[in-house]
Length: 555
Image 1 (cartoon, helix red, strand yellow):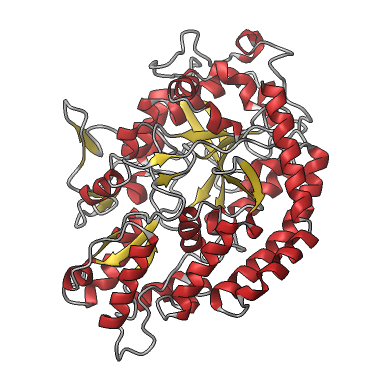
Image 2 (cartoon, one colour):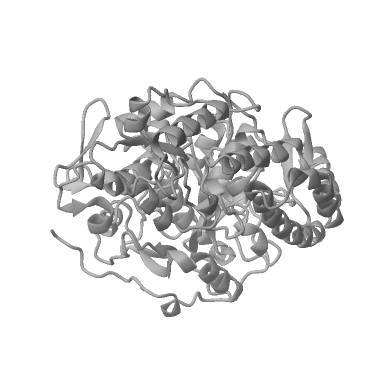
């Protein structure tokens, strides 16, 4: 395979020092109209708009610095074909500041606080940007959306303004360009041994009641005489570290109308009362914990589900000691089907996301993690070109297709109806499993630093038929509106952070005690008093004040 020669790419953060001191504040649209940057248009196109291929107008390629995660599944290769294809199209190449995936957030914080962050900083999950707002380290990118025609079109035509309000700060600005989705595409749910469901005539459950019924049958029929057998033994006890049982508790919490598990926050929007409530003391949170405790008490849920590593949960599945496990679409293909190869006839597939008292609803933002910019970029002579390039790569149809599929003819073919087919000698996500080349490892395509959101067609273009069926099973559900934003000002944020830190530590510890039966629900009132004693009601007052103030400022 042909490889490009090494470009001006720096493979370690220490090799890059961003010139100039860290700007305390970024230029706002009130100070200077974005499209009038006469001295900041070197390399920019005069006719750049939605649907136009961006290409830097300089004779030599422009170089932009970018922070990227060095992913263990596809370690960074400076000679990936992707870099050459990108340069051929855009006349832009990268200087990389890399960090291992496991240490990415800490490394990013260190660089930003030291004033050494690159121009483009990837993988900002909400609300990770909040800690950098007061210092002025990040560009208030919402001031410059007129330079981003693809991004701006998607926000307006996909009606994403309510979603973006969740990333808007108290100053009315946002600092991250989030990945934008045309439609909500949920992924995480539970996976189950479908050969056993067929064996016992169990229809895939669609509610938490049916989910429990399924577990009871599997326990009675498959765990009898098997030591250490539980129908459900779960995984995903990872970042954030204070969210054990991340997907398990989240899924059951959503069925009860509360943010829990991975989604947990100290406040929850109650769609029935149309009011914020303290999450941990709400009826929905208690009902979530009672449901999970019932599974543990009846031997349907492995108590180690909240402490074990992923490999331990997968091993139990592979040994026939469990039959249900949390999953996304890639886990099915990359993990579980390989794990079950030693059990003749074993098959596994995702289940519909179970509903509960909250109704036949689905929630979720149409945003995902995104990119931010060092505030200093506004002082660069290439500022407009940087904005145009970023808009093309992360938010245009052509840029996103390049990032996700590679180059037509080189990695995939595209039919007249728009259907894309991966080349036979390339594998990815279960397609062409015997192929010798891998789309990520060998070409640098489908890198998590560049694949954010997109049209319904593009986001689902790598979905298998069974994953498309899973998505179809959710189409009759009502998408809940986005909860009202409640951004704190600087003073409130300090107070809220202190309360939330102490509160969440206690809530997570007691959550597991209730689930595992180490604390009886007869002590729930005492738990409520503990939460309020740690500032639960004070925190809620801050949230409501911020909500009302923000609503007044935007009315």
